[in-house]
Figure 1 (spheres, rainbow, N blue to C red):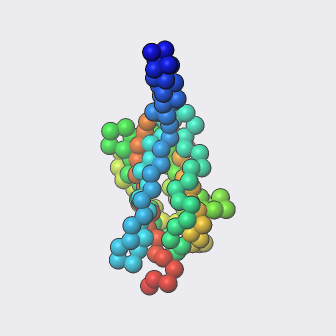
Figure 2: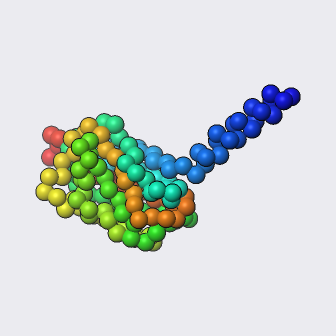
Length: 148
């Protein structure tokens, strides 16, 4: 009986910190010659989301735009910032995803002339956000190499 109680306590001790952890869930779909990367996120607000992998590999191509949608139930702070980094740590949107709205979806195009994603890895960074368990979704459209 003591082992059972000890086992239950150990599960609770190790599982409870995970309940408030940052979560990033990517899904890649293809339609009409475009790749769409959908990233759902939850930020526990302790440090923001610091360079969390979205993809370890993905469709190489030209980044067309992004749509950011704040959570409907638990929205992030107004003017929170999003960085989408490539495998070298370059912000693929050149700060165009900074100062996002907490209430309405917003679109943005890359502001840097070199908006090519190499397909070798993509990371998400969210800053300026202090709401516990804030949620949101980011949609990133990529025109794969060789598509016209």
